[in-house]
Length: 363
Image 1 (spheres, rainbow, N blue to C red):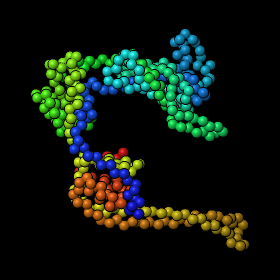
Image 2 (cartoon, helix red, strand yellow; image 1 turned 90 degrees about the vertical axis):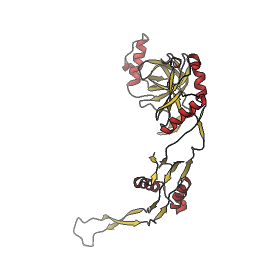
Image 3 (spheres, rainbow, N blue to C red; image 1 turned 45 degrees about the horizontal axis):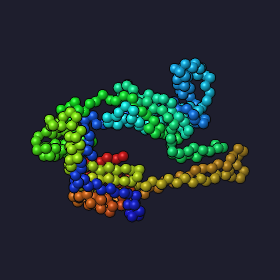
């Protein structure tokens, strides 16, 4: 039984302290980031798989009116259009005319976007300004078919991509070369790692040009020879410097897949565990009750449910877990033969008792 239960688990051990990482892989420089764009658009050319509501009809009527064609929304009966949201990730330092993929997703009751074409859609940033426009045929990489009330589908039919369908029309207002100092932001804030980054940069240039401001940022003063147009060269040198990252102790459990990820720094102080299951079984049988001979008029045959409730408590043996390293934790949990649900309960109890020296995250 224990062997069968252990098979539910996949243990992934992460060891990071022995390996150095490039600065560019653990964060980004100030301003070197993506921006998100969004727009409301209409997809046309669908083969009867579009929206049933009025949203696309009204949008089409308004669009035609801007083109000088007046038509009443009531005159548009086709289900060959769909209202969609168009999203684009704007890369760092985009240039006018650059083409990007656009993600198109329905917001109504359309069944499929297959064969549809996105009509010219302005894409705005968080500041309300238009930075790009998108248009073109949609690729969904699947199909939807069927008949007689049955259907077969492959992949999601209500979302698709317009390959290189978005064109940048306006560049974000940010000039990297105007700064005499720049900040580096860590993806995972940590005082030790931020200070290590500053020390490595200072050691490389043999002078104090970097300082950790907080656990998530490092301020770097740009040397005179690298200011202005030479700044990209300076940043390319800095981002290739190797740094040993000091990760916090963390245990991540995915109950759906039975995957447990344990970081290198996870420790377990001595503890004793006894974990058993309470099994409640409810069984319902049905008995037929017939009226006796010469029973009064109106007596009927009835079905009477008979319920039986059994409660069984499985034995939980007390298991001692001594102060443990990463490998010892894994062996101890395997020896307990725990299921995914049991493991979560045990880890939560160990954390509450102060024995688990790590952050427990359940996803």
